[in-house]
Length: 406
Image (cartoon, rainbow, N blue to C red; front, side, top):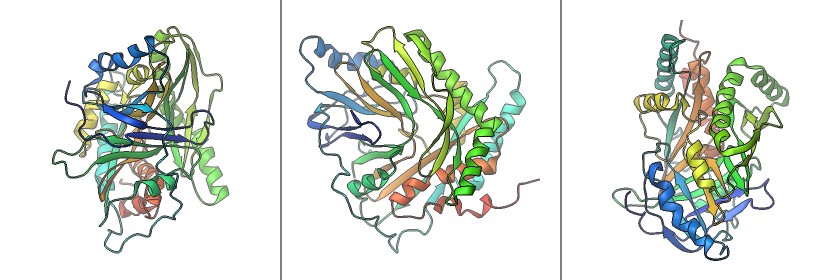
């Protein structure tokens, strides 16, 4: 266990899901208390006093919320607040996206660049081919890359969140993170995630994993062809099936009923098509808190791979930028244990005038390195637009348009 985050912010977390008319907006309010930080192995003990208080008094509206890191052994960042009905940060921001300042780079700085990312994908595919048929063989790994964008002035959070929320298919979130080691500026994890990790209400649980993606296109006919190609893609459906099977296996021991009543279908945001499956279950113990269920599920093969431990080690070897809270989980939980937790994707870490964006793609046998690099480039689009940059800025790398290597 480590120390609590310093300097509690006025609003440590907020979430907005336009499709949820009941609890689609949760914005922390009232006195803020940081929880002691620690890894997943100490989480249950650290949050137990919060839920234990509900046995002695009526629900007081208090919430805990925040972020779980990608690496379960790393310290999380959780906050306890008096309630969840504060003002959403983007509510008063109606200004259009500001233009790109002259001194901002014409292109964000990719880390790694497209060529380097494609090399990493090729290495992962070679490992899969070599191990095919062996016990504990690597069958999937999700590889990410980042873009670094810097400006003269700090990014304005309200305007950014308002622009991200223009897409009704996503959940816009903001979570205050611990300060950098030098304490120079507060950090925020901000994003517009399309993926629900886990929602709990009483004994009811829902998860809606997404795996398998294609870029949305401006031309309706071309966009429809892209969607149809994704729906028919054996590689993408196989990738998606691995994720669904994993979540069903993880939830089965704690559920008395579990299934996928709606089957698998395409879902869409403004910038991407996805293959999705809604998973619904009934818990054996309805008092199990949502945060502990989310921590047990996370990270799923949608952001890590299979086997998870093998994939996580390869991710550490191949990705030059540590994920920290990217591809972790963000969400909230009330005294009853009800709450929503989302996969922390389509997001960026903001620190003053610096924004580090992240995007990943699932690699399985049949993946094409250039196509996976293009997919990550497309996934940056919504956040780049919200920053006032061209949405295709990450797709302009010439290596993405060269002929495949022989």
